[in-house]
Image (cartoon, rainbow, N blue to C red; front, top):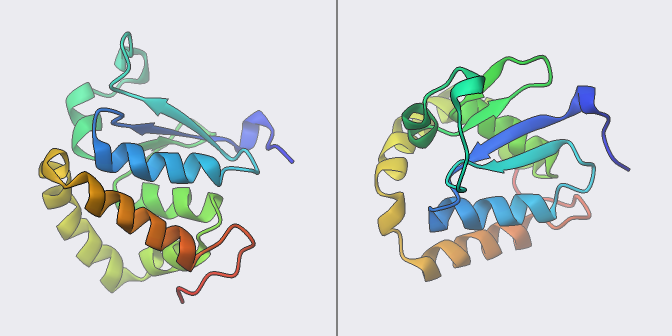
Length: 142
């Protein structure tokens, strides 16, 4: 089952970042309902000018374009991304004000150091995440 255009959120991610690329690969594989479209902002020829957002801003925080043209940036973007790809437990945590505030404080540090993250650590984190929330929806994160 695929979503119609009026339901699709567009995810803009940094494909030059191993951490980002790994996370997006996992999410793309779980995008069976077609609720997300993924755009690599590091791809040759990508131009954010028509979007009204600078590339620098997009590299600092993940951006998701809502179907109505509005933006979700940073942690609210991740909430929508994880909910759309079958990680309801993670999305629920991101909706909790105290956890969202903590994640919002940690996220800029992670973004700043994302290129230095060891590839094996990144791969392991996403394998663990996928095991804790299989595609059948039986997530173990509450």
